[in-house]
Length: 209
Image (cartoon, rainbow, N blue to C red; front, side):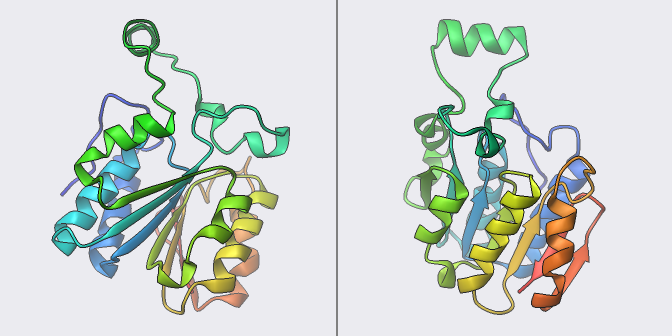
C-alpha cells in the first residue's frame, strides 16, 4: 500500500517519498505493537494502522501520544503540536470550525478518524515526558518519534524509551535533517548507546535498539 492523504493536515503531505519509506519500514519489520509520539491530526496514524492491519490481519495495537487540543501548556513543551493548531486553508476552516464545529486536533476527533480500528487504538493525552513512562515499553515493537523537536525534548524522549524498550526494536525519528530543530543532535548523541543508527533519506533516521 502507498501513503494516502486525507482531508486533514499532515507533515507528509508534500513528502510522499518519506511517508512511503515509513510504511516500507513497517513492512520490513512487521511490528504488532506500534507507538507514535506526535499524532497531530491522525493522518500518519491512519496510514500506519492500515498497514499494521494488513500485515497482522487485524491483530495489532497502536498507541499514540499528543497534547491534542490542549494549548494550556508551558512554552517549552508547547512546540509538541500547537505550532500546527491552526487551519490555514479558509475552506477547511469554514467547514470544520464554523459549519461542523469540529476540532481536528481533539482526541475525540482522532478516535473518530480511526474508528475503523477502535479495538486496536489507544491514545494518551499529555506531554511525552509524562505519558511515555505510562507506556509498557517492553511490549512496543516500533516507534515513530515526531513529537517536540527541541533537543531537550527529543533527548528526553529517547532516554525514556531506551530505558525500557527491548533490544532489536525500531525507532524512526522524523525531521532529522531540519537544522532549526534538535533531532539530529539528540539522535547522533545516543548512537553509541544503541545497536545501529541509519539515515534512511536525510529526513528519517532509523534507530535499532
